Length: 111
Image 1 (tube, helix red, strand yellow):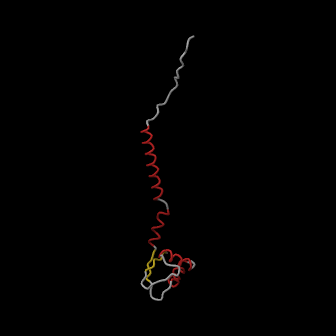
Image 2: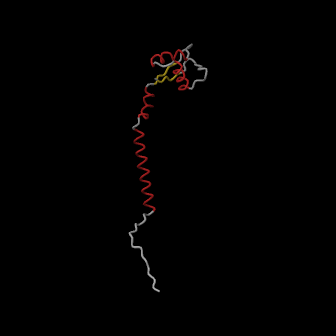
Image 3: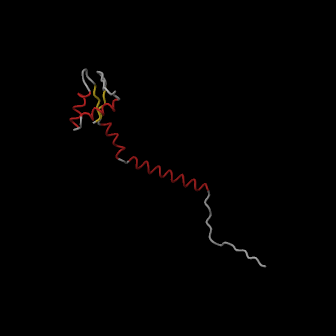
């Protein structure tokens, strides 16, 4: 009985070397990182913090002055509720729940 050998004559692609895959993966990661940096630097929220820092004022507390006395002109100028401005003063200046102020204390007011 004769036996016949069958050979596969189809085109076979050479497998790429693992080193090439690692280099290609590294290039993709670097490109994605660069695109992310570019997009992150051109977004409006990246400039918002700078604008907020530029519009801050420092108020020195005088004897007998309360948080309400400080917040009223700010609230009137911005058209906000005075309680919102007082809350912003508490948060920005780490005041306690009673909003205790001392003469000479410096408060940061953000407009």
